[in-house]
Each structure stands twice: as structure tokens, then as C-alpha cells.
Image (tube, rainbow, N blue to C red; front, side):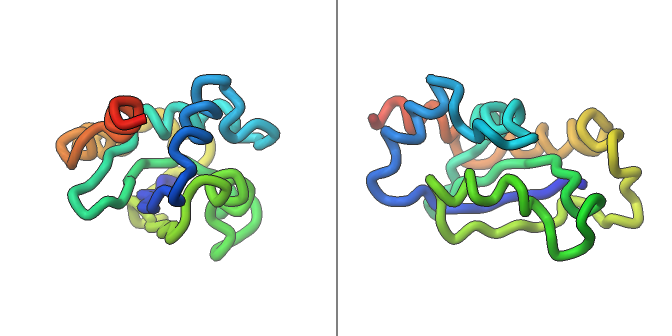
Length: 128
């Protein structure tokens, strides 16, 4: 499934997050480890200070409804708070695993997201 994630960066975690991204340790230990960096590279900083990104996750398919991002969440919670997980598409219209990662819907959503706010990672690097 595809999710729109909105969150706020925890205060004073900016440098730690950059270090984890640069050292390629963000999400290390997670089965989804390779996708964490991509999520941050495509994340957008919205005008209200929230960070938004798209994440493809199969926890719902594996563990059932209400378990969205259950495996990834502890890694995100290290750096972010007020994490909101929203389905980016009606599950009835989604083919799920393994199609989600590279389907047209994901590409369309990523394209739309590029028009929102500013690039989060660029802004973070420029600030810290």
C-alpha cells in the first residue's frame, strides 16, 4: 500500500537525522531500510512546518488493517513526532504487493508532491 506521511521533525534532531541519512544508517535494521533515504530525498517541507512524504509499505497486507508502517514507525519516531499516516489510495483500487512500489499511481503521487512546499532535505542541509 501507498501512504502519505506527515510529521514534524523533533526539536534538536536535525543534525542527527542528516548524519543518519549521510551515513546510510537511517532505518538500518528495518526490512524497508533501503527506502528510508528515498523517502527523505523526496520529502517536502510544507508551509506549516510539517514534512510530507510518500511511503510504500506492505505491513497492512502482512499484518492486517491498523498495522500500517508498524515495522518502520520506530525508526521514524526516533526523529519525528506527530506522525500522521494516511492512505494515499483506496485499498480496493490498489494491487498491493509487490506492484505498489513502481506502479503509475506512485509515480503520479510523487509528481504531485514535488509541487508542494520545498525540498525538505535541501532545506535541512542549508539550515544545518
